[in-house]
Length: 186
Image (cartoon, rainbow, N blue to C red; front, side, top):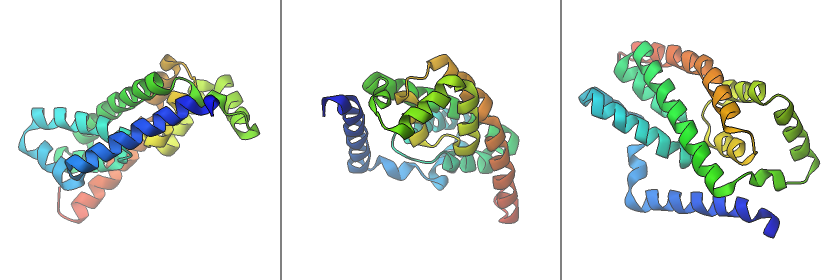
């Protein structure tokens, strides 16, 4: 049990944070309509709120595509994509630092053969691994938690995230722009 103390602390923190957002009714602000309206109504304050909500949302399991969709529909595919890229980077860094502070490299204490194999790959090619994970899973909160708890160095995490996010964000921008035009939202 002592071996998993850091991981249990992270789980408890996330459960408490999730419960707090539920009880206070804050989760209702993590939707496409609300985010879109904030960006349309006031660009500067809306963008700041967008970054804040993206960062908090990443901690409580809100998928990044909701933020991307709202930004593209409100700002267009270029500016919406750029706003999302910057917000996603800030969000990923915030999540990494928060979870790393609470849980350290707690996943290194897992001693099964799958964990050992994953860590060997991550240790051998950390930036390449993170780039590929970002392309496949973008800003999925569970990926951010796992990488924070993996013991990977922050600068490698940051480089992999910076390099891995543009392609999926660009593809989502094209998709949401197409949907917005097809539905006459944009």
